[in-house]
Length: 98
Image (cartoon, rainbow, N blue to C red):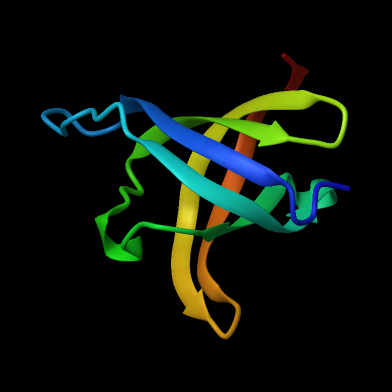
């Protein structure tokens, strides 16, 4: 459905007290969408995987062919694959047309 679409992620809140909130936007693209599990797997473009927090709530935008879709959720896993740096992102709210 969304494979290969561009994605922007931005941390909007933190789960842990004292964790810093940055306004950086993370550029990704959809690697795989597992809608039945409410997960989306994203390939990171220009960021070090180890710097991304698993303790935050993120807002995302998927730039589809005709529409922009918003969603919210959390990074549940981050790992290296032969395709690149991957984020396993659990969708908690979404998708909403912008």
